Image (cartoon, rainbow, N blue to C red; front, top):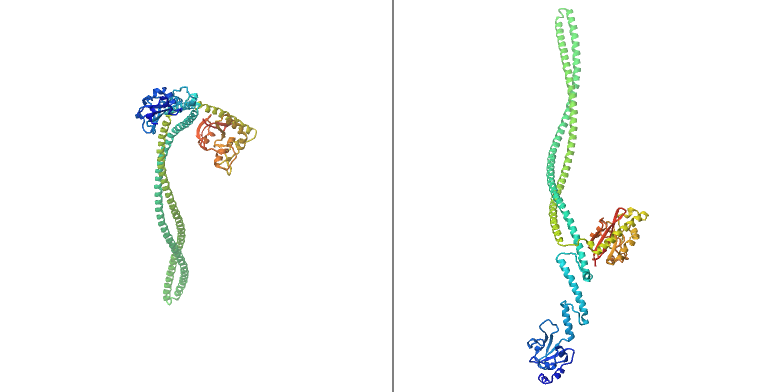
Length: 612
């Protein structure tokens, strides 16, 4: 049956031609006239079948044939009613179009959903929308939290204030925890920047002074190097001159030896002359004796000649001449004896002088020998000192080079110190943009942990003092800083003179803190070196040999040398609040309080917890 035949049927017959389904169905002719509708459609439109017959398509909220584009689709009526939607498909059998309208209940749900999306919050008509309402309400709360978070971050406010209802939501708790972590981290950065800013100017001044001292040291070393070079040159010249002196001393020694030999030969010759003079003296004695005898004979002859008279006159003349000759011979002998005596005395003096000269020359030779040996030794020492001075010169050159390098490094350090000072000022300005909570203890968890930590630290100090008093451990052992590695354990663990006593005393004082609140992760004691003698029972599980598992499961008797681990047992502040990331990756707050045994600082109690 075609569409034209359908139009000849009564209206109720045409309506029956479409399925009586819960969905409103209509048929539109090619001329865009309504030709059929089921009962659900009549109910949606609120009209009768007679009124529908041949009515234009515009009856459907202003629908025009031109709005039906393509083989199928969805047309939404103008306005804000989501229920006024028409789904269409081309009728290939009868021509025209087949239309479907939303179910009445579906239309109601669509209208309610739109109003919910617009945040009008009506009372839902259908229970089916209750989950959607709850979800939208939760999303509305999350959006409110995010808006306040964005507003705080835009103003660099790190104190997130939420109404009680929003603060208890999952997102509210997580964001407040995140803001708390960030606020304390920046608070620490601010404190560090202030500390650095206070320490940098003296550092810059010290570096400037170091540059000046390095410059003066370099200049002094240059002067020392020049002096060493001059000393080396002078020693070289002295060595050369000393070599010449040694040569001259050798020549003088040889001349003295020759003079000593000549003096010795002269002495021997004078001795020979003295001997011969003595021999000549003996001859003179003989001559003198002969002259004396001759003179006696001449006297006797004269006497005999006188007795002989004229006959003996010639003999008397001869006797007279002989006497004269004898007298002259005696006088000559006396003169020769005197000359020989003087010569012998002179020869004695010459011999003595020759012997003295020989002794002097012998002494001079000895002195020259010793002087030559001394000068040779001095020359050797000068050569050795020349080598040492050359070594000193080389060392001084090295020190000069090192001094210049140090000067350059000092200048670089000074430049970097000034850059650090500028960077610190920039950091302080940057972190100064953030407005932090006035007092971190306004956060209830911080205040609660501070209360627990300070009280428990006092009890621990008292318990350790009592252990000393009853002889369980002596004070020296309790404060010992000697650590013995425990073999075969990774990460490294250590035993001490006091960890055994701590194993007996500390658990009863530490474990109740973990039971006080579920968000407290650990409560342990550490000495100034970051050594933890006794960890919590939950972190003292049996070792497995798996380093990753033991890192988390067995943390006792370890040294924690990270930034926080080093400080918790070393400070004596009333308390110290820090935020950090554990070696397990977890973001933690750490509040520590000092432990005093008597009046002596032993370490600190650290409590780790989260804000989530």
